[in-house]
Length: 607
Image (cartoon, helix red, strand yellow):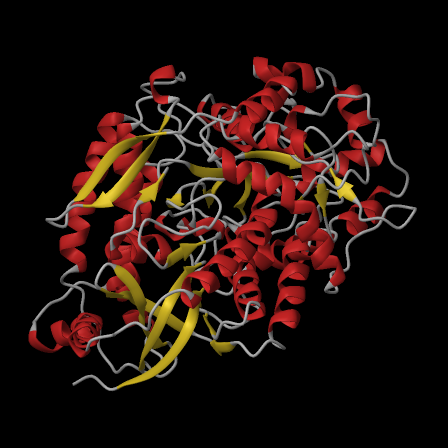
């Protein structure tokens, strides 16, 4: 019999980033007994790395902004693949969530008359991102955490959930272990909210932190919930490619929002070469007009560096493939050039982008006020994830909710910068609220000893293999092989033949993962942690690859070199992944419901 600790909650929140904290706060405020599980330490969630700002139509900088324009921008950026109800709720509710955060103590940058300052960002028609320099995510986590700790939430730090438990066809809790001692924990809960973030660690080059191994998506899938839009992976155009000490680390879009330009090895500003027709009326066609936009001229058009992320990333890759890239396979991002336009430019840059300046100075000895950065696309964000109801955030499995990056719907085929942080606030709140309501209306759950014993035995298998087999696979070798394969074969540019090879490779790696063994004991054993992560990484890698094979077109974050254009045949449905009765992964097409007429009119007005 496995030795384990048991606790019971009305609502269990898995993940303590922005979405998880906001869900826990709302559930606790509704009177629910709330448990909060985080894979790392409280306060170290990946949300702290979000730099640019929170997108909300406050209209503090440009009075023409409103929720309708924000809604239209989000739908256009998502190539109209979005869950339009989520996009509506997000645009409507984001301003209130930002003001609420301010009331809880968040210290935003200010306009001269004392209102929350907002900056330009790619894909947004007006300056919309409320920010705290380039440390917005850190301030959000600080504020939410300070607010949450006074609500009596039961917090379990450095604890990883490995299996969701069910009572018949509904959720019943989770089986987990603490990472320091390796002790098992069982959480019985009437409702579970998954807020575990993204899948970036399935790739070799990523801006994501070590926790982002697709835990929530994989847990939900194995429990019977549906995944959606897994082909839409966002490769942020500007991650550092050199030096190695900062490889993959994100260079916030705020650098381009404050005037940074992209140039190739010849010093040419190549983004003017390829401006999509649907953005041409909004995009400057010369350097002078783009600079006037950066400086706040409401009548100027934005610079092409602030086009949507998928477009900028592909333009960078074009320069690299055609031999005009930087020495280490990227291009140059230069904000130091503004010294020709602004007096005391170094001081201005350090004030506007303090984290960027200090981070790269300390980690790479690069002074961004004096020299360009060498950047290229880095795996950044998953638009797809757990399929949820737009209003409640409940998945297709009763009692299982999801919010933030682990949930699908809001962003469609491509996310606009800044929408992720307002997504956390809007749908974290909704997930917590409706999870508490579901728990209040549901009978007690039953967790069986057989289910717990089965989960414990599966978790201990890597130790058993090392004891009884002469030779076993190492967990790190399997993980590295998967990351390199996904980067090469299912990356920013995709082809049928390569993705077929990736599916064969995933099957081979799954067989290798089944032979992974670890030695030592359960205390402080990172090899064991990696071995348990492999199942999640392989699940999301297969879901991404199968979904990308199904969508034979290019749209948003999904680019097929063999099908480089949009195909209207694929415009009206989401690709949904479920677990078949035999355990195989099943891919299907689900029709997107027609948009309400009033929302259609808003989109038409803002085209």
